[in-house]
Image (cartoon, rainbow over all chains, first blue to last red; front, side, top):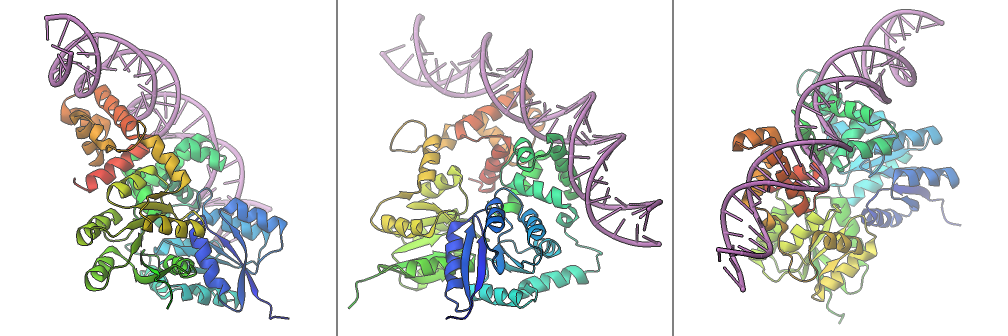
Length: 218
Length: 218
DNA sequence: GCATAAAACCAGGGTTTCCCCAATATACTG
DNA sequence: CAGTATATTGGGGAAACCCTGGTTTTATGC
């Protein structure tokens, strides 16, 4: 009988990346991928119906729900299930948000594959994993004394952040309202507040900012 | 002596995804990854110094240079080197630009791994590869059936083009009307017609297109 | 528990943009 | 020149967006 492997669940809307990560993980003798989901809803459904994995790897840049929302729902469902966030965003604000939201680690897609398995082992061992780059960013953020150069994006509330993300994904206020089951008026207020906080002069500016942010290029 | 494998070069700033794609490719008996680059400059430097691969897989969402720029430079360097674009953007505009820029295929990261190797074989065989989803999108974009895809941007009239440019510069309809000494209604009609001709679904799409376009100061 | 503050939610009313439509103007063609 | 195609110009109603203001919900400190 072989040693018990750690069961990993992948949540990412890029199937190609899921495949790649699954291979990296399955090559390791002490872990294996037992489930894959393309979005947050699918992930939550799997966790409700099937046996829970030992760890969840999740991209926070999902199509529909914000990954942060998913982390929260997931915590309500299975409180002690560790979550490792795999993101393409190298900004401290994302990592900070993820960790505050209950994630236990944060790695970037820019990093090589061995970082991933290291991070998984660390998180499974009960530690918090942050890449060196991200540690440096977080330190700057904390050591900055809260005085200057605090990115404006950090002043956004979770809802505002989620709306920004969906704007960046190309959705209208109407669509966002339906996706989040809120009144259009609420979404419009969020838009207004986001623009105020980020000092964006009009809607077109907001579109540009959101697009830039959510795709890091596009 | 083994059969000659096709030499693949990867260009993507996400090392983790590169690793994953490399594994998928190296599993195939008829292809292997011989080079990896994290950005466009690195890729061009490798191509200048070393032996050329048989095909280049490239993400167009690179940090420094736009992927489209890289494709162009690459074509100047080695004219017949086939390029397969691997993108996370599912918008027809991207695929269209990539193909017009000389790419021979376009696959999305949302698609499963076997699509990737299929696409590689197709492109190496001299064909153009487009996923089914993308084919449908492209068909919607191209008026009239068939071969030559006349750049949609060329169908814009001088006035429309001027308006597009000013939108890209961040101006509102109101501002553009004053700048050009026209009624706001005229500018609004131009906006509407531009969107129709370019198949852009809403105002936000227009903002994105205009911004992107004028950023390339063509 | 209670007070306070922050966040989330939404309505009303003005402004801008969308969308369809049409009149005039310019160009090109047989 | 007449006829047709394309460009430019805008009107009117609908939809989306901007902004103010206010209520409910949630988190936090005492």
